[in-house]
Image (cartoon, rainbow, N blue to C red; front, side, top):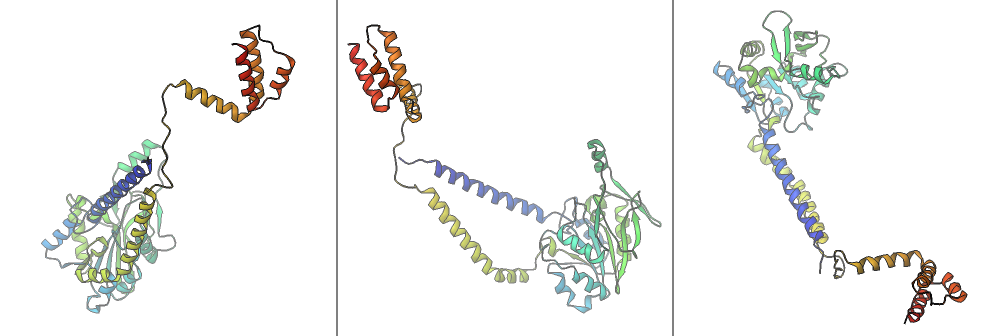
Length: 364
């Protein structure tokens, strides 16, 4: 008779693995449409910005390959690269020096930073490439829950440095540290610079919150006027980086698949080892045994267990002395002499059984 607990554990383990895999795929699918992407129709997406620029006759392009491949074409050195953070893919391998090379060649970069709890790895490396010292700093928040909730829900007013309408974004959680030569265009009510531009080589970089070009902000004023200001300030064409938001050129995808054969083989081997482990764990270990059936409210089981406990603790002498005492109380005619008492004091398991048999004969 085999215990099925191991098989049940394996079944539950397999269920949770499949559930985790499905949840990961669903989350990855949702992430593919999130963020500042010109293919995303969500409130934080940029599809409305691209549609607006195309409707105004602006030269708008999207790239589905790494930026270093775009850099090799010198005829495109005067274009504006538009990067929206956070990235959805290839964030670990992103090298921000390609942006500096593009700027040195006379290009422009529109750097739209995120408003998360802190910058992502690729975003932090990019800010470090162009910012002085610590590239960003957190916004000090109140420790009082009510005050913290009020400041988090209240929109942030971005005040123009010169002329123009005030812009609005969600309450900022951190500020980028701009270089000293930055021309500040917008700042918060407390004076923190939020939108600014500065020269890098022969090019220009303009940094701003990514939310200013989101679908949610462009749907109301003064979002369109700010986008029109950017379109007249930064040179065309505008090249939106969609490679880091999940859009991959088919030819590049085929190359990555060919390069990833070794990794696929390694993952396959790990999967086979895991399946072998699960198969071995689910099998019976050693010979089968018949489990002892338990009976509820059984006096026999209770007494046997109690006797085993006393036997393990060596209570034979105490039990023999108590046996003689109770026998004398039960029948005064039973003679308990000194020899019986001496035997009881030094009794072991066998002597206890012998005394029980002798006293049983005395009652007959």
